[in-house]
Length: 265
Image 1 (cartoon, rainbow, N blue to C red):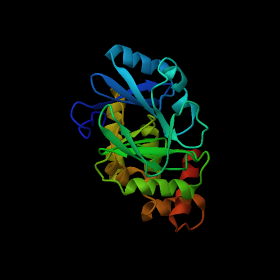
Image 2 (cartoon, one colour):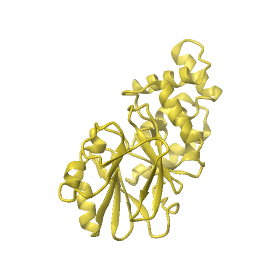
Image 3 (tube, one colour):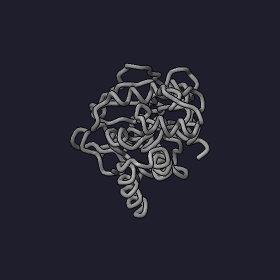
Image 4 (cartoon, rainbow, N blue to C red):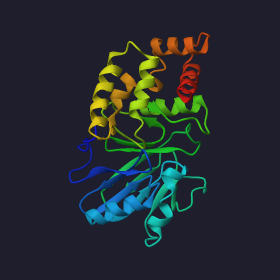
Protein backbone atom coordinates (compact mmCIF):
# COMPACT_ATOMS: atom_id res chain seq x y z
CA UNK A 1 0.00 0.00 0.00
CA UNK A 2 2.82 2.37 0.78
CA UNK A 3 4.86 1.99 -2.44
CA UNK A 4 2.38 3.26 -5.04
CA UNK A 5 4.28 5.90 -6.97
CA UNK A 6 3.93 4.73 -10.55
CA UNK A 7 0.95 6.98 -11.33
CA UNK A 8 3.11 10.10 -11.48
CA UNK A 9 5.44 11.01 -14.36
CA UNK A 10 8.84 9.34 -14.34
CA UNK A 11 11.25 10.79 -11.80
CA UNK A 12 8.53 11.93 -9.39
CA UNK A 13 7.49 10.25 -6.20
CA UNK A 14 5.40 10.91 -3.12
CA UNK A 15 7.03 10.41 0.26
CA UNK A 16 5.38 10.61 3.67
CA UNK A 17 6.76 12.79 6.43
CA UNK A 18 5.41 11.72 9.79
CA UNK A 19 4.18 14.42 12.17
CA UNK A 20 2.53 14.50 15.60
CA UNK A 21 1.19 11.07 16.57
CA UNK A 22 -0.44 9.93 13.34
CA UNK A 23 -0.28 12.66 10.66
CA UNK A 24 1.26 12.22 7.23
CA UNK A 25 2.61 15.27 5.46
CA UNK A 26 2.90 14.27 1.79
CA UNK A 27 5.93 15.42 -0.20
CA UNK A 28 5.77 15.29 -3.99
CA UNK A 29 9.35 15.45 -5.19
CA UNK A 30 12.06 14.66 -7.67
CA UNK A 31 15.75 14.87 -6.86
CA UNK A 32 15.71 18.67 -6.62
CA UNK A 33 12.31 20.11 -5.62
CA UNK A 34 9.44 19.35 -3.27
CA UNK A 35 5.76 20.29 -3.14
CA UNK A 36 4.39 19.73 0.36
CA UNK A 37 0.76 18.87 1.15
CA UNK A 38 -0.71 19.95 4.51
CA UNK A 39 2.41 20.78 6.55
CA UNK A 40 1.01 20.84 10.07
CA UNK A 41 4.52 20.95 11.47
CA UNK A 42 7.45 22.65 9.73
CA UNK A 43 10.31 20.91 11.52
CA UNK A 44 9.97 17.38 10.07
CA UNK A 45 9.54 18.93 6.62
CA UNK A 46 12.69 20.99 7.07
CA UNK A 47 14.52 17.84 8.17
CA UNK A 48 13.27 16.05 5.04
CA UNK A 49 14.49 18.90 2.83
CA UNK A 50 17.87 19.01 4.54
CA UNK A 51 18.44 15.25 4.53
CA UNK A 52 17.70 14.97 0.80
CA UNK A 53 19.15 18.33 -0.20
CA UNK A 54 15.83 19.40 -1.74
CA UNK A 55 14.24 22.81 -2.27
CA UNK A 56 10.64 23.62 -1.32
CA UNK A 57 8.76 24.94 -4.35
CA UNK A 58 5.08 25.03 -3.29
CA UNK A 59 2.62 24.15 -0.53
CA UNK A 60 -0.88 22.70 -0.98
CA UNK A 61 -3.47 23.02 1.81
CA UNK A 62 -6.72 21.03 2.03
CA UNK A 63 -8.38 22.68 5.05
CA UNK A 64 -7.83 25.02 7.96
CA UNK A 65 -7.15 22.66 10.88
CA UNK A 66 -3.89 23.45 12.64
CA UNK A 67 -2.43 19.97 12.16
CA UNK A 68 -2.55 20.72 8.43
CA UNK A 69 -1.53 24.39 8.43
CA UNK A 70 0.63 24.94 11.49
CA UNK A 71 3.92 24.75 9.61
CA UNK A 72 3.14 27.27 6.87
CA UNK A 73 4.54 30.36 8.58
CA UNK A 74 7.91 28.81 9.40
CA UNK A 75 8.29 27.19 5.99
CA UNK A 76 7.75 30.45 4.13
CA UNK A 77 9.50 32.71 6.65
CA UNK A 78 12.72 32.71 4.63
CA UNK A 79 11.05 32.06 1.26
CA UNK A 80 8.01 34.34 0.97
CA UNK A 81 7.94 33.68 -2.78
CA UNK A 82 6.78 30.09 -2.27
CA UNK A 83 3.18 29.74 -3.50
CA UNK A 84 0.78 28.46 -0.85
CA UNK A 85 -2.38 27.17 -2.51
CA UNK A 86 -5.50 26.36 -0.54
CA UNK A 87 -9.19 27.03 0.17
CA UNK A 88 -10.77 30.40 -0.45
CA UNK A 89 -12.13 32.51 2.40
CA UNK A 90 -9.08 34.39 3.63
CA UNK A 91 -9.14 32.53 6.95
CA UNK A 92 -5.89 30.59 6.56
CA UNK A 93 -2.85 32.76 7.17
CA UNK A 94 -0.16 32.32 4.55
CA UNK A 95 -2.26 31.26 1.58
CA UNK A 96 -1.20 33.22 -1.49
CA UNK A 97 -3.52 31.59 -4.02
CA UNK A 98 -7.09 30.68 -3.09
CA UNK A 99 -8.80 28.05 -5.24
CA UNK A 100 -12.27 26.59 -5.61
CA UNK A 101 -14.18 23.75 -7.29
CA UNK A 102 -12.97 23.07 -10.82
CA UNK A 103 -9.87 25.26 -10.64
CA UNK A 104 -6.64 23.88 -12.06
CA UNK A 105 -3.52 24.00 -9.92
CA UNK A 106 -0.41 23.76 -12.08
CA UNK A 107 2.90 22.95 -10.43
CA UNK A 108 5.29 24.32 -13.03
CA UNK A 109 8.33 22.77 -11.37
CA UNK A 110 7.04 19.29 -12.16
CA UNK A 111 4.65 19.94 -15.03
CA UNK A 112 1.78 18.59 -12.92
CA UNK A 113 -1.79 19.88 -12.95
CA UNK A 114 -4.32 19.02 -10.26
CA UNK A 115 -8.04 19.68 -10.36
CA UNK A 116 -9.57 21.19 -7.24
CA UNK A 117 -12.57 19.35 -5.78
CA UNK A 118 -14.61 21.01 -3.02
CA UNK A 119 -15.43 18.38 -0.40
CA UNK A 120 -17.17 19.99 2.61
CA UNK A 121 -18.11 17.81 5.56
CA UNK A 122 -15.13 17.46 7.88
CA UNK A 123 -14.82 21.23 7.56
CA UNK A 124 -16.77 23.62 5.37
CA UNK A 125 -13.65 24.83 3.55
CA UNK A 126 -12.22 21.39 2.73
CA UNK A 127 -10.84 20.81 -0.76
CA UNK A 128 -8.99 17.93 -2.43
CA UNK A 129 -6.44 17.87 -5.25
CA UNK A 130 -6.83 15.29 -8.02
CA UNK A 131 -4.70 14.64 -11.06
CA UNK A 132 -2.33 12.11 -12.65
CA UNK A 133 -4.36 9.36 -11.00
CA UNK A 134 -3.56 10.54 -7.48
CA UNK A 135 -5.85 12.16 -4.92
CA UNK A 136 -4.76 14.26 -1.96
CA UNK A 137 -7.88 14.30 0.17
CA UNK A 138 -6.79 15.56 3.60
CA UNK A 139 -9.27 14.40 6.24
CA UNK A 140 -12.27 13.73 3.99
CA UNK A 141 -11.57 10.10 3.04
CA UNK A 142 -9.42 7.77 5.11
CA UNK A 143 -8.37 4.22 4.42
CA UNK A 144 -11.43 2.43 5.75
CA UNK A 145 -13.14 5.57 7.07
CA UNK A 146 -13.88 9.27 6.72
CA UNK A 147 -13.38 12.44 8.73
CA UNK A 148 -15.57 13.50 11.61
CA UNK A 149 -18.26 16.07 10.85
CA UNK A 150 -16.79 19.01 12.74
CA UNK A 151 -18.49 21.68 10.62
CA UNK A 152 -20.46 20.09 7.80
CA UNK A 153 -23.50 17.86 7.60
CA UNK A 154 -23.97 14.21 6.77
CA UNK A 155 -25.49 15.25 3.44
CA UNK A 156 -22.42 17.35 2.62
CA UNK A 157 -19.95 14.61 3.50
CA UNK A 158 -21.90 11.97 1.61
CA UNK A 159 -21.98 14.23 -1.45
CA UNK A 160 -18.26 14.83 -1.12
CA UNK A 161 -17.49 11.12 -0.95
CA UNK A 162 -19.78 10.57 -3.95
CA UNK A 163 -17.51 12.90 -5.94
CA UNK A 164 -14.63 10.53 -5.20
CA UNK A 165 -16.70 7.55 -6.32
CA UNK A 166 -16.76 9.05 -9.82
CA UNK A 167 -12.96 8.98 -10.05
CA UNK A 168 -11.20 5.96 -11.61
CA UNK A 169 -10.93 2.96 -9.32
CA UNK A 170 -7.15 2.84 -9.70
CA UNK A 171 -6.82 6.34 -8.23
CA UNK A 172 -4.17 6.35 -5.51
CA UNK A 173 -5.55 7.97 -2.36
CA UNK A 174 -3.24 9.98 -0.11
CA UNK A 175 -5.04 10.77 3.13
CA UNK A 176 -3.52 12.55 6.10
CA UNK A 177 -3.72 10.14 9.04
CA UNK A 178 -2.78 6.61 10.07
CA UNK A 179 -6.24 5.59 11.25
CA UNK A 180 -6.63 2.41 9.20
CA UNK A 181 -6.52 -0.27 11.90
CA UNK A 182 -9.21 1.42 14.00
CA UNK A 183 -11.28 2.19 10.90
CA UNK A 184 -11.28 -1.45 9.83
CA UNK A 185 -12.27 -2.61 13.29
CA UNK A 186 -15.34 -0.42 12.96
CA UNK A 187 -15.96 -1.50 9.36
CA UNK A 188 -16.00 -5.13 10.52
CA UNK A 189 -18.59 -4.24 13.15
CA UNK A 190 -20.80 -2.66 10.48
CA UNK A 191 -20.34 -5.53 8.01
CA UNK A 192 -19.27 -8.65 9.94
CA UNK A 193 -19.89 -10.86 6.89
CA UNK A 194 -17.74 -8.81 4.51
CA UNK A 195 -14.82 -11.06 3.55
CA UNK A 196 -12.98 -8.18 1.86
CA UNK A 197 -12.75 -6.34 5.18
CA UNK A 198 -11.29 -9.37 6.95
CA UNK A 199 -8.71 -9.88 4.20
CA UNK A 200 -7.81 -6.21 4.28
CA UNK A 201 -7.44 -6.30 8.06
CA UNK A 202 -4.88 -9.08 7.69
CA UNK A 203 -2.80 -7.01 5.26
CA UNK A 204 -3.00 -3.93 7.47
CA UNK A 205 -2.06 -5.91 10.58
CA UNK A 206 1.07 -7.18 8.85
CA UNK A 207 2.03 -3.68 7.69
CA UNK A 208 1.59 -2.15 11.14
CA UNK A 209 3.57 -4.94 12.80
CA UNK A 210 6.44 -3.87 10.54
CA UNK A 211 5.77 -0.21 11.34
CA UNK A 212 4.81 0.38 7.69
CA UNK A 213 2.25 2.95 6.57
CA UNK A 214 -1.15 1.69 5.42
CA UNK A 215 -1.56 4.60 3.03
CA UNK A 216 -1.73 5.42 0.22
CA UNK A 217 -4.48 3.07 -0.84
CA UNK A 218 -6.47 2.39 -3.98
CA UNK A 219 -9.85 4.03 -4.34
CA UNK A 220 -11.29 0.74 -5.59
CA UNK A 221 -10.45 -0.91 -2.27
CA UNK A 222 -12.54 1.69 -0.46
CA UNK A 223 -15.60 0.71 -2.45
CA UNK A 224 -15.19 -2.81 -1.03
CA UNK A 225 -14.26 -2.17 2.61
CA UNK A 226 -15.15 1.38 3.66
CA UNK A 227 -18.66 1.62 5.19
CA UNK A 228 -18.85 5.35 4.47
CA UNK A 229 -18.40 4.58 0.78
CA UNK A 230 -20.93 1.73 0.96
CA UNK A 231 -24.07 3.40 2.33
CA UNK A 232 -26.03 2.18 -0.71
CA UNK A 233 -25.48 -1.47 0.26
CA UNK A 234 -28.21 -3.33 2.12
CA UNK A 235 -25.83 -4.79 4.69
CA UNK A 236 -24.67 -1.33 5.76
CA UNK A 237 -28.20 0.07 5.85
CA UNK A 238 -29.46 -2.89 7.88
CA UNK A 239 -26.63 -2.56 10.37
CA UNK A 240 -27.24 1.18 10.71
CA UNK A 241 -30.95 0.55 11.21
CA UNK A 242 -30.31 -1.97 13.98
CA UNK A 243 -27.98 0.47 15.72
CA UNK A 244 -30.56 3.27 15.42
CA UNK A 245 -33.56 1.10 16.39
CA UNK A 246 -35.45 2.43 13.38
CA UNK A 247 -35.62 1.56 9.69
CA UNK A 248 -33.21 3.68 7.65
CA UNK A 249 -33.66 3.59 3.91
CA UNK A 250 -32.07 6.72 2.46
CA UNK A 251 -28.30 7.02 2.20
CA UNK A 252 -28.04 10.27 4.16
CA UNK A 253 -29.73 8.73 7.19
CA UNK A 254 -27.59 5.61 6.91
CA UNK A 255 -24.44 7.71 6.66
CA UNK A 256 -25.44 9.91 9.61
CA UNK A 257 -26.16 6.83 11.73
CA UNK A 258 -22.86 5.09 11.05
CA UNK A 259 -20.91 8.35 11.45
CA UNK A 260 -22.48 8.86 14.89
CA UNK A 261 -21.82 5.20 15.69
CA UNK A 262 -18.15 5.57 14.71
CA UNK A 263 -17.81 8.74 16.82
CA UNK A 264 -18.65 6.69 19.90
CA UNK A 265 -17.12 3.37 18.84
